[in-house]
Length: 113
Length: 112
Image (cartoon, rainbow over all chains, first blue to last red; front, top):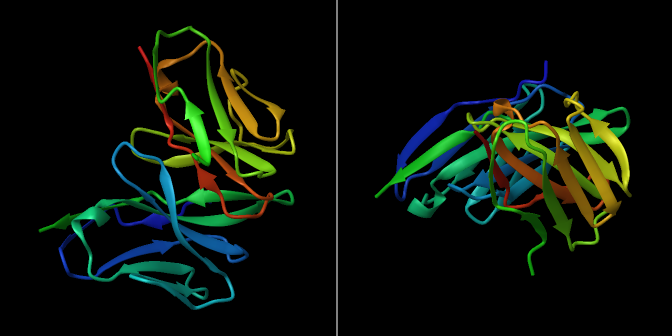
């Protein structure tokens, strides 16, 4: 099927690290993405990783990719209250030669002071 | 300086009406998309256009008709609105059909 799965909720304290996990379905996905959605707002691209990479670091964000298990994770170091949002992973899937994004169910991250 | 913009931001209407949502991108991208986000925050692609041509149509009812007058605009017209059409609709664009997608702020449609 097309299910990209994420846990629904994650609660952490300010200053801790957050790890959001995602399992995807298509081993031929070229890129995998993380988007952030704040309340009442649109989707903001956070980072992405090419499928031939295992890890990508971008300031407080670290993306880990395990292609064998089709598992993607996003680690946020020193989590702040402003990081509270819904985080979506997405895989790119080929659709008759064109790419489409298939999104996960979203993980709601709550950061408490 | 907004990259992908949508109007209106909120739309409240009665069942059976016809409405349109507009999307514009000033990024010079060739490909544009419409996504629907339901009340459980689940996001699913509806359509994609590349250089004004339809390339993806994800079994959306034919009451939904996208129109692309030029490659910077992709509008969504919805006929005979139903309660189940209530959702947030996001427009997105990418440089080419395989590239990173950038999203608009969304239009919250409420059908009464």
